[in-house]
Amino acid sequence: MDVIPALNFGATAKIGVWLFFVLSAYLLAGRLVGELEDSTVRGRVILAYAVRRVLRIMPAYFVFLFGATALGYFRMDEALRHAFLMEGRDHLWTIPVEMAFYALLPIIALILSRCSPRQRPWLTVVVVIAASSAYAVLASQAIQANSMQFPAYALFFAFGILVAQSRMGLSNNAALGIALASMAAIVLLAPRSMESFVNISVQEALGWSWAIGLGWAAILYALTRSSPLQYLFRNSALRFYGRISFSLYLTHFYLINAVAANMMLPGIVKGAVTLVLATVVATGMYLAVEVPGLRLGGRLARAIMRSGSAIAPRT
Image (cartoon, rainbow, N blue to C red; front, side):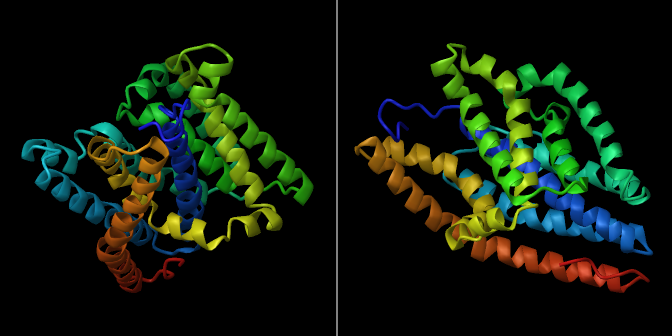
């Protein structure tokens, strides 16, 4: 769908996925390392973490697959392969990648929790270097093809863990400068920007995805160390879309295609209609499916922690 005439946003959505990987690693690594550090029964912390993650992702994912199958987007065998994370068609390749990270994170977090706070950033640098090696070998073709190979995307998650474990402070002015410079770099390195201004193909531009991931990490780092920047992101609309973002991600692709195929409207109007429709659908799915899953995950996690001599998980 050409939302704005003369502008092609194809491949640009990948930038948002890389942000999600960085942000997910930052949020989960910081929390899990802290819980493991404070706990007397680490096994229960990891079990509670696993329960929360599964009930955060899978209920909405299963409901989406059921609905998409009922509407004819998937055959039953395709839906089952997706449910068991064996396949990731269209934008759904991210789900197996994210679940692979969830499975690996407890091992990394256990190691980090046994190190001193001063040692953790350096150990995380080792993780970044290892992930960079996998990226160099696999990412070129894997990212172009939306492959489900987790090692090809491990670098984005490693950037997020590094931000979570970093201890260096920043002044507000330095944080603002880093954030602005990083955002400018992300815009310039976006696949369509490089295609337009550097005259290279989108496929070649995707080879710079590591730099975009690093840019997102730099923005996140600046944001976590600057109160003025944090204030900007307390906007109620941003917080609302943050809450419904997973349901929005699951449903947006097919809603875009449905609107594009069935409505004879100018591109910018189609974009507005799609945004409203996707927001309504995602909000309903969030309230009906995600919220109950989150509440159940929280209750089960607290029950797991209470059943042993360990601290309750952080909220």
